[in-house]
Length: 433
Image 1 (tube, rainbow, N blue to C red):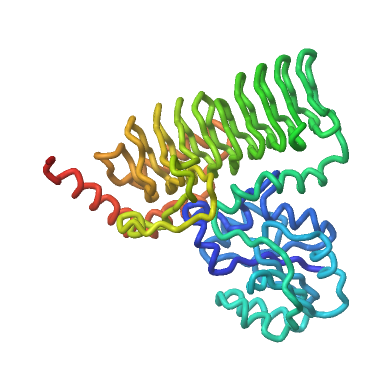
Image 2: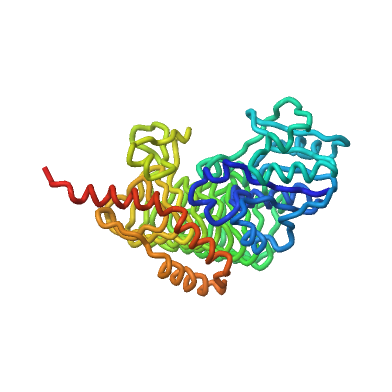
């Protein structure tokens, strides 16, 4: 059977996190959304339907998958924003001998389609009309499923997803890597240390609150404390003295130190030094300077509001996240200087270079350079050159397709950025009372 993950119009609501990737490539728990579904249906042939400008880059991200024409065979279509649902629902869907579909909170998120109808479905999904695509498939009663609508949802659901995802890696504790004498494993039966990984002397892994997964070739350095549920991705390093609180998912090839709580690192990000990061989502190739901090709880103990655009931010039209605790959402290739601080629920775009001791605004568009009071545009050519150098340090080449996406995103975000920069410049010119 074919398994096809598709994007709908809500993929754009993730702001900077989906400027350079399809929505199902985002991480929640141990795995990305696509990886979860591939594990749930290991015998299926994987296909993707993505926004047109992402097709070539998605082909590079998933070289074994097919992106364009699906064969006229029975296909299970699943919305790429699906974060979790009961296993029984998806397994029933796959095993059903007839066409069937599922909705959650009025949104169709999965449908099994006969081969002769696949072409019709694909055409309308490419047109952004899933209702039309599945109009002839009978709708059953609603089921409980969770379709993410923002990075905030991924942060909120990640701790319980670590619990759910861990079952794919081990049943009970499995110590395959090196755990040095002097390392302490609390509730070792809930700890997985994969081959090639290393837990050094003096490190403490405490799985009393949930499983801990240390994946292949990862390292937990001396005196680091990791509290479950938590995941340390392939080739990642937890620095000496780090405090990794429960609910944190560290993606591949990250370097993480200081104090971190319930935060998702997509991958290839650096937070090497002291500083607090809580209830946040960190994109790829992000570098957080020493003592970068964020707030994840308002002093009024009320729900955190977030902003999706410069206009919303300037007009103070924040959106209620529904969450009491929410920190920073920061896009790919953004860097911060020493002692940079972010307010509760802040959103920062891709390709930024931010520094200074003043607290950053709650919304910073993509490709912004500078400090509060002196922001300017981060020009695309030097930004790409810096990205290329940063990637070379991890022995990764900047692909032509990613270069093109960065340049497209620079143009796509221009109006949002100019509105923000003009407003910030006007604020600077206002006379002091």
